[in-house]
Length: 509
Ligand code: SF4
Image (spheres, rainbow, N blue to C red):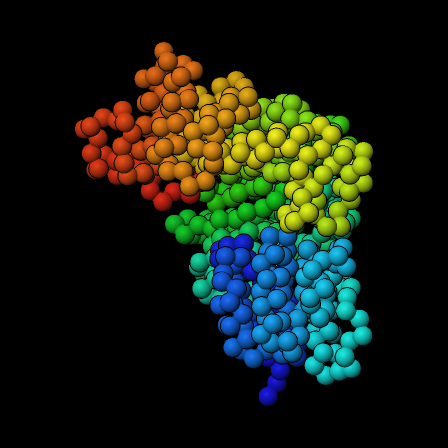
């Protein structure tokens, strides 16, 4: 009997199907036929996972390790090692590709593969299974030519296609050098052969896939390539307008040539989404993190997308970067708000293993958490308390603004000082609950109304009308204290947008 191999990872959510594991499966060669791909989530029970994995009597188990699953994966590997010490354990993935000597998970495992795994994993398996036994514990991943890699898309099951996000990639790497980002180490980007890639996309589409999330770090690097990809999805959308696709891309904000714009304008609402990295609007901070975004161009492009296309737009900002204070962050936030993106996603700086941001540790007194996700705790310009308040701000911004559940009320909340006013609201909500989770939506509507009416009692009627409209639109079954007793369930049902996604809520503004 041939030795059973398992490739596994703990995804952040069930909906996040692992593209990395599927690439490894596709390129295993002789080992593919006796390898199983088994995915869990970080919420899965350790003992249950251990028992299920060991029930397959594996000779080798390889785990994909990321910043979001390293603790849970370590716990699972410890449980496996205790129960079945002969099972060979391999780890690979971004979290174990740098600074591996000091990590408990690397001390526990038999082998570590750093960087790309598609060529190195089958070579390592051949040594483990056929001998001679590998001498080295750490195996530096060999980088393949993308044209030589087998594409992994057949490893999405029919169930994956209908119940999970389908991650795809037309290119790897990034030519930019933002110092907080692991992709900055690539120094360039490589493209997969486009015809073969699009043939795979067509196959996924014919099998029923409708949600495609591109993991390319910069989709809009090469306009001709981007245009062909957009045209591919446009053709599907035009051929079957009643059964549209949803396509998500990460883009750099200051590069939007006509060739892409003319295709983007043709996508109907609800079919196209862009994640647009801004990170900071402070040019001094930009220099410190080696980010070269042309902010004037970025603003023009985001405004153009908002005004001329139906694309759903996320922009990203990061707090805690070297030389950014909360005052300069607030200025940047207020400026960015006026650009009109549907969502502003707020993050906090993380010290990813291997990234060059560490060169600032001393000069800016950057202090990071020791445990994943290694968030910044404080630096020379931002105190721990300010960062704690920012995290609360970010959570409530997500619940209230990004969720699309307060579309009528949000302009009243932010008025002409978005950061300052929302910060004040956040402090009000903190005083009510001392937490930002497990809050009933109805309570959130009531407290936002209380905060607004306390500041503008003369506009109470207007405020309550806006909150009531948002409340009904959210589809919550209940009644706000001031709501019209005559509002029937039927009226609600007619007005409510049940089951709407964030994008749909934003785009019905
Ligand atoms: S932040 Fe974006 S643009 Fe900068 S290096 Fe990373 S992937 Fe590239």
